[in-house]
Amino acid sequence: MDSTSDDTGTTAAPAAPPQLLRALGLWETTTIVIGIMIGTGIFIVPAQMTRSLGTREAVFSVWAVAGLLSLFGALSFAELSAMMPEAGGQYVFLREAYGPLTGFLCGWSFFVAAQTGGIAVLAVGFAEYANEFLPLAPWEQKAAAAASVAVLTAINYRGVRQGGALQSILTGLKLGAMAVIILLGYVLVRGLPAGSSSLAVPTGHRFAGAFGVAMVGAFWGYEGWNACTFAAGEVKHPERNIPLALLLGTAAVILLYMAMNLIYFHVLPLDQVARSSRVGADAAVRIFGHTGSYLVSLLIIISTLGSLNGSILAAPRVYYAMAKDGLFFRWCSSVHPSYRTPHLALVVQAVWAILLVAAGTYEQLYTYVIFAAFVFYALTAMAVVVLRRSRPDAPRPYRVFGYPYVPLAFVLGSALFLANTLREEPLEAGFGAVMLGVGLLVYWLWKQRGAPKPRPGAPSASCPL
Image: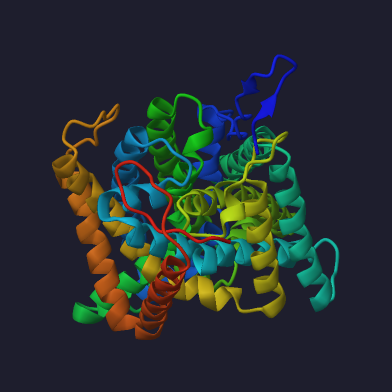
């Protein structure tokens, strides 16, 4: 029994289980948004966009459209997070709007590939760029990638304050370094080197297809703005701080990305941008000389670690929330009695991500799951409309600006993106659909294991593990 008796014979109440600690302020929450969004994409994908589209103007248009849609999505998520500031974020929003199955499928895609695969990609990226400073054999690079996941998991295991403090430091260093590149790029560089200022430009339906494919790269660059909602249960004054963090963080990244692209085209001719495999490093060489390549490699290492730490911090809160609903291993719902973190959810995430690193299948998984991720993005934005109708009297400390046009614009943009992915990259879309189909089977099997624990307001399923 959990209760105990004192000397008078009275029965003491059972000790309350440990709870997550609200320790993240506005700055830490904003650095989760910025830190996860700015990974390696901005230093690489502008080259692919330039090859596909052929003009600077088209490249800027892609970044602007994807950024605006991301901002609309962030504003939509802001209303939901202020309304339901619980651990699990997007999973909780989907569960409350559509029922436990939709929430489970979202969390399933996060665990199988979207979050853990992203962690594996970032960890291997860190090891590859560290290789420029400390040459490593292929197996040593995998070991370094696995070690980065293990070390950052250990820091976040010890407390959300520690993870948030590290996120603040890494994001601050990242923003400072990017600001230096942007400012000195304009101050030190005068005139383009020799090269072509024009490329072949697709027309008609070919341009529309190329624009849609380029959007994949832009959305990859903006990916991660939703992750701070996962840790909503540990944010101070979440009804205010989460909407502000989503708005400020997403807007800041849009401005930084546009400024970085301006620098690339300011210091490099169009054909060199298109040919480059690492356009950020090539631009830095033009600005700082041969040491510029090493400076950008160091920046990418810091950037990757910031994105990696933010992902490791945020994502386990989804599995923790699922476990509390009986839709994941039940032991993942436990909170460490001293550190007040979902420690077992952190550990199971780290184990799976390290296995993906070792197997070398992470990149394919992460690429293929983007299709499924946007299905859930669209459904979550639509949940703003669904919950406005089904729960009109629920408290909403923040209401999305421009309702219903902003969430519906995001839903429409996501639908067009999904349709273009189906047409241009059917294999990736097909894999995402198969993964969701497997998730349906897993959900059914999990429900067969036992009845759900009662939770007010919504049905759920349970697993006795």
